[in-house]
Length: 152
Image (cartoon, rainbow, N blue to C red; front, side):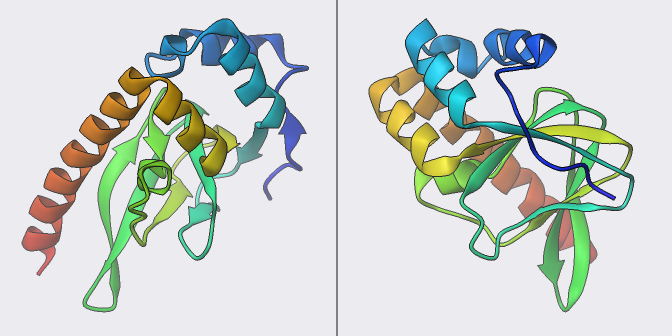
């Protein structure tokens, strides 16, 4: 069963992880602190649902473990990506283009969650963040289209 959400700021290893993340290190120190102040960390067991796009307003960052991204195709869930340490899920929410999908732990996983509207505001202030999220989204869309085509 998933652990209760915990604040990020009290966990030095998590703070260091966020500060080293390729996307988030483009923020200035104040913006990273603001993001950390509203973020949460949670642990999941294999097979547990981490996130689903039914009204979820968060973006997720994998700190440890692996998680599968599932999209529906012809009434079946198709895994279109496996995310590992440092990968984001929910970038479409930040960019205003959410995709219906789910994130499920494949192994024991530790996941950070941030409010998408906060990260969206930061992406407007820091254009490199927005460009990186757009690149992630484009690559994921291409991979998903390929895998969904194979599943059909």
